[in-house]
Structure formats: C-alpha cells, structure tokens
Image (cartoon, rainbow, N blue to C red; front, side):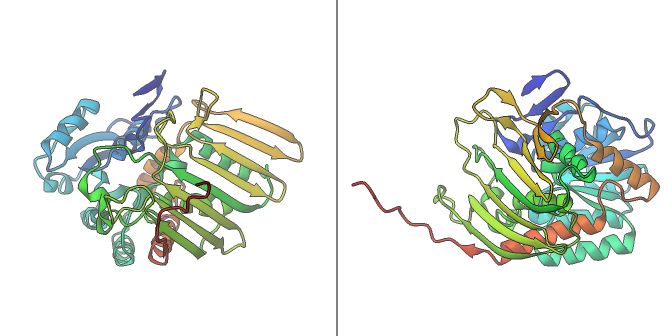
Length: 375
C-alpha cells in the first residue's frame, strides 16, 4: 500500500484494489444518520466504495459475502462492521438505507433490483450491467421503487484531477467542450478470479473498463445522450484466455455535437510504477485540459496533474490531496433528501447503456502474428 499521509491507495500496482482515501474528508451527516451495508465482495473496488461513503459520514453496519475469507479480509480494514449471517439479515434491517456491492458483473443487476425492492438504495461497482435486458429491468425497478441505482465510476468520481477538471469546465476555462480523448490502460496482474476471463460474467472490455470512459465523456461534454459510431475489441497478449479482451476502443458523437474517442487495455507493462497511466485530454473552443491521473510517468511524481492551456496562458496544477471526493457526500445527501446532485439516475443509466451498445456492436479484431519487416 502506497501511503503519503492521509492520502493512501491500496493496491497501487493493481487497479483491482484501487481504494483512495481523502486528505479532505467532509462529513455531511451525523453519526448513525445514514447506515450502509457492504455485500458481494467479488471485486476490490468495494474498499474504495466504502472508504468514500465512510469519509462522508456513513455508518458501516454490516458486511456479507458467502466466502468467509473475503469477510475476514474486509473486517480487517473495516472492523466497525458486523458480519451478517445471510443476505436477508441486511435486506430486512430497517436501519440500512444503502447497500454497496462489488459482485461479479453479470450478477450486479439482480442484487441491485433485490436491494431496491427491499427499500434500499444501491451503489454498485462499474460496470453495472452486462446485458441490455439487465439495464431495462433495473430501470423499471428504480422507477417503481423510487430507490437509487448508483454506479462507482471511480476513474472520475475517485480521482482528484478528474474532479478539478470538471470544475474548470463548469467555470468556462476552455469554453465549450468539442472532444474528450481518453486512455484507460490497466495492468492485467495475477491471481484474477475465473469470472474475470468469461465474457458472460465480465461483459467484455468496452462494457467493463470502457464504462469509465463513456461516463466521463457524457459528464465533461454535457451530453444527455450519444451514438456509438465505431468500436472494436481484440485479444493481443492473452491467447490462453480465448474469451478475454485485452484491447478495445470506441468513437462516439454526443447529442450536442461533442465527440469522443477512447482506448482501454490490459497491457500495462510491469515497468510502470502504478497500475495504469490513465490520461484524459479535453478539447474546448477556447483551450484544452490534460489529466495525468495516476502517475507523472518517468518523472518520479505521483498522479493528479491537471494541465490547462487557454487564451490566458499555460498552467499546471498538482491537485493530489487538495480537492477531495465530493461525490460521496452528495450521494448520501441525495439519498436522505431525495435530490440528484451527485449524479442523476438518467446519467448513470445512459453511460451503462452506451457501453453495452459499444460492446455489442464492436468489430472483433482477428489477431495474427506480425509480419517480420527486418528479417
């Protein structure tokens, strides 16, 4: 675990366990006012989800997973929680207002619908769905129950440089957004569970880590909808896992004319000091912003660098530990107050829908051995 004071990240070498802690936590509720439970500990993002909510004032009451080893590891980090004996102990507890979970992706929708039908808000890891039918069922349940189905799009919500970029755009620093260019490289790592390699379980690379990129595009460009004009996927380095996709990209056009291109992959080399050199470049009519999210590669620095160029000049902001993560407090207040400040339900579902369409319509790249050019 990398540690620089209060700002710590579990699993700096492996994005599966990315779980930042804020140097600027801000409580939005009194102790016990907003009680949560954690379920389905299949992905390490559950630690980041819980960190964010607890730092904003949530009280973590329960944890449940059928695997005792996962529960034991979770309680070592969050000893204030109690181990529930069954899902029903959480679902039937009237004190629990929100369930946060990181289930196998193909199982996230069913758990969320069950949570909402028991009167709980639901906060799931991305990707929230692996099929359009799951999305349709969740939409119906959210509308019928009045509960929230929120998504942990961590590459914007839990990255200080990404938060600061949103504020710069809202303040008009680069004018109207014309294009969002995103790269989301990840380290494959080792000891991945079996479901990670089955497309029926993880949904495909554009559905999975591509969901971050599409959500960021909609947010930064101010789009309510978009069309996917092209997408493709391939497996270049992991032939032992024929259903695994380690590369994907897509192009979108938003309903306001803004455009997006993004590339995601599982090809981060071992020599990089963190799990992925994620970057975003946002072009506006009056300037541009570049985000170096997780590392200042080859310069020995941490991430969260924001570079701004506009008509007034050139600027670089190192915002690590300076901004915090306001989404979590806003989500708690939204649940308590019936508002939509953290993220609208429409936005959460639209990002999920577009990543499912990009995945469904993707060109399957047929990978062969490269031609030897210098033999």
